[in-house]
Amino acid sequence: MKKNILSNSVFMFAVLIFFSACHSKYPGYKKTKNGLYYKFVKRNSGALKADTGDLVVCHMVYTTEKDSELYSSIKANMPIRILVVKPLYKGDINEAFGILGLHDSAVFIVSADSFFFKNVNAEKLPPPLKPGSIMKIHIRVDSIKTKAELLKEQQLYAEKLNQQLKEMKNNEPVLLNDYLKRMKIKAKPQKSGLYFIELRKGKGKKIAEGDSVRFNYAAFFVDGRLFDTNIEDTAKYYNLYSAKAIYRPVDCKFGTNRFIKGFEEGLSMMSKGGKAKLVIPSEIGYGEEGYEGKVVPYATLIYEVEILKVK
Image: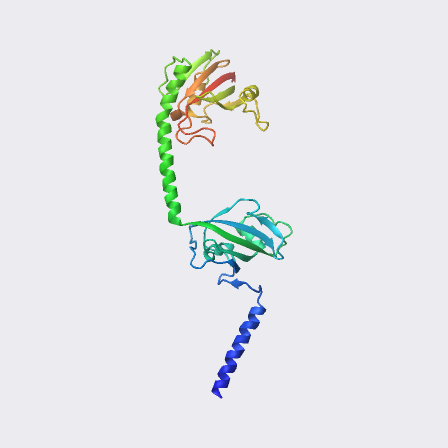
């Protein structure tokens, strides 16, 4: 009698499991404790898995619940680089990178709202997705760099960058002296290091703090390349013209630290109608940081300035 009861219990338990699997929310998918549904397409036993702080390079394809493609990094030929973080909410796709191993691929089911608003920071859902809908994310892991490997790369990059900066710093005076000789500049530097070469003497008092000044300028590197100007004809001549740029005289109140030190010092030595060339070493220019990708670190700059008005 006891044997029959046990057999019946085992049978009913097996039926219950089968019935539950056949009628699960997403048949064929497993669910993590954090609520992320997933189904492996390819799984490599014992493959390296990413941990928090590791970098995963992967391909991702977004589809609707009915498999209409929304985006494919494979078609775009743009692998996605993701720094692995801990899941931020229930069903967060970030958990996928702790499940997948190297060269694994799987499909994940996520909330479209959560993915686009929390992970992508989008302002609205892309069509045809609607609020409350789900989507599938197909992920294939192509490579994994551990946190230690990333740190090593960063250290090597920093060492290389420091070496480059050191070379640029040592090379600046060589390039400056070469420029002075080539241009036959005999002027002595100011205490700051500024070379002031007067091209046309102005009239009236020198520019002082608080004055309203109007001027034109053209800025060059020591090799003769133009990198900035407010003069349209000059920009066109040096093939630096941009239809988006505004070409007109600069109006400013002098002494507001709006410009680099060398330029401010040069202006203070000029007056209305004057024109001068300012040779500005990086120490009183953009220094070891450079400027917005336009000016490299430790670059000596040459400004040609014409004062139009002083008030």
